[in-house]
Each structure stands twice: as structure tokens, then as C-alpha cells.
Image 1: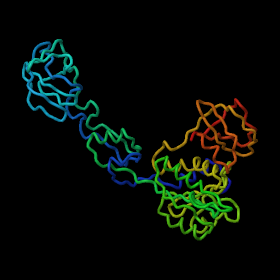
Image 2 (image 1 turned 180 degrees about the vertical axis):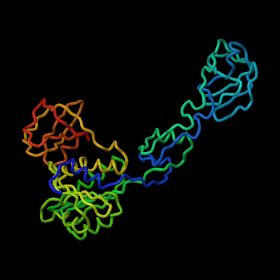
Image 3 (image 1 turned 180 degrees about the horizontal axis):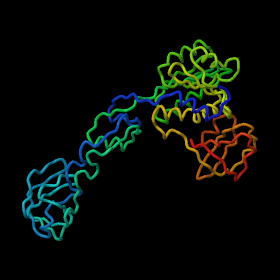
Length: 391
């Protein structure tokens, strides 16, 4: 397919990947950001026993106010196994198990003690300063659902139930490379005619921001056979992302690469920037070749690949959201075709940088949105309401 809409391109790409259901078991302490492969239920009430919420003395409320004999002391982690008799009290610390025969706790700063005699000066209510077993989590409660991206609180809850390992979906296997003999890596000598490869750093960093761990393949040469060999050798991966080589120049090799090793799904999307993107398959692996222009690569990665990554990883929060806002800067160009321009969206107001060339990335550094300009639009004016994609 050729010259398709963005929405059609997204539909084609997402229909050519499957949700990852393979799982692996990892240590709970290493599971931050991973996606659960099954539901996790509470194995027991937590806390597992009635406990004191403060430092004080456990007594029977029906005997208050009055004097009590202190028969022992219990700190968190200890256990007083005896039952309190009439007129007895137990000194108790925060988090300690409530002893049998008691139904309340008086804070230690409210009492006076003379040797082993405790004086409780006021009436206490039944279950005053008393925490019940299961107050936090009842046995059988669904604590963490399948397909949940694990955050610190989830991990803490699982730890409180004694889970030391957890089943999570395997990581999405992603390979990233750039094409172009003109590229060199940062740190290498920048000779005449060469430029530093920023696209590789952009795509890898965005993937890492989303908690993916891509394989970095560096720069593929402008050689069809060599590039094809590298891509085909990763056909057991889920996704292969490249930048560059997608237009119609002498060294735009990705058309021939795809023809040699796979099946082209589409070429050219009716949008700017990044129109000449290619979608393809090599076996079960999805390949997406993006424009080599830095901002075009950035915009098409966000627009095309975030829905793909969301499906593969079962993480819907990756999908970008749309909103509307009011322009506080104008965009003077006429848009014959659909166009996405960089913008900063704050509290419903949209500001625009001065630079919008697809080969320029610097002006996008402080932007957090793309303005979606429909085909056939005239210039955008200050005060105009427009739709944005929030990045």
C-alpha cells in the first residue's frame, strides 16, 4: 500500500503484531516497570493479627478507669502468648500483637506507673486504639491484576504477602539501528561530509523512557546485502526500528532491503514530517523504517510506534492522548497536506517555536506536544483552537 493515512498505517502496524503473553519469573525486587503475567491475590489477612497502633498499655476497657498490674512487655516482633486476667495490663509497642483478654490500648503518655502498677485515669472504649487483622488487605483480595505495570507500591504490597518472585511478561524484543554512510557515532572524529548520529540516541532514549530495553545495533552501511543480513538475523525479535534510507535517493536502500528479506506493508503516509516511512514484515517480526530527518524520525516514532509498543507490551498508558488548546503563537504556513508541528502545551495554551524544519531537532527539545493540522488548512492564527497530540 502507498500514500495512506496515519490512521491506516497505525491499523496495519498494530494488526501485524500480537500481544506478548510469554512470561518469565523474576525476583520481586527486580520487577519494577515490568508487566504482570497473572493475577495476584492476598494469601492471608494483613496484618495477620490484631495489633496496637501506638506505644502504650493493652487493657480490658470494661475495667477502666482503674489500676492494673503490669505483667509483661511486648515489642514488635515479640509475641505474648498468655491471656490477660482481670486487673492485668501489658506494656505494648506499635505494631505488636494484641494479647488475649485485651480490647484497647491507652497511650503511655496518658498514664502513670508506680513500679509494676499502672494507673489508667479515664474510661476507654471497646476497641479504642485497636487495629484488626486484615485491616490493610483481606485474604483473597485481588492485589495486583494481570497486565499491570508494576510500580513501587505494587511491589511493596506483594512483598507484604511474602512473594519473593513474580511472573511477568517477557520484555519486548526491539532492535534499533540507523542507516547511512554519512553517520558517525558521538566520540568519533567528524570528518568532511559526516554528521553525528542523533537519531539512534533519540529512539533508544525514548524507548528507555518507556521502560523498554532495546538492542542497539549502531549504524548500518548503505549496502543492501549487509543491511539485509543484519535485519534478517534479528527476525526472532518483535520489532526492528531503523531511521534513514526510506526516500527515493540513490542510497535510500530500505526499499531493496525489504524486497530482499521480507514483505512491504506500506510506504508513504499522507502527512508531514516523515511521509516516506516504510512498514514491513520479516517472518513474524515487524519492521518500521522511519525518515532520517531528526524531527521526522521523532514525530513518526511517537505517532506510529507508540500504539505498536502499547499492544505488544499490554501497556495502554503508552498510547498518546489528544487534547485541544488555544494558540498563543501563529503558524504562517499553508498546509496543503496533513502536518504535525512541534509545540508546548501548558494549561490549555499552545506555544510554538520559531523553527519547524524536519531536519531540525533543537527546537523540539522543550516541546511536549504535536499540533495536528488537517490537510487544506490555511495559516494558524493566535487565539485559534487546535488539536494536539500530547507526548
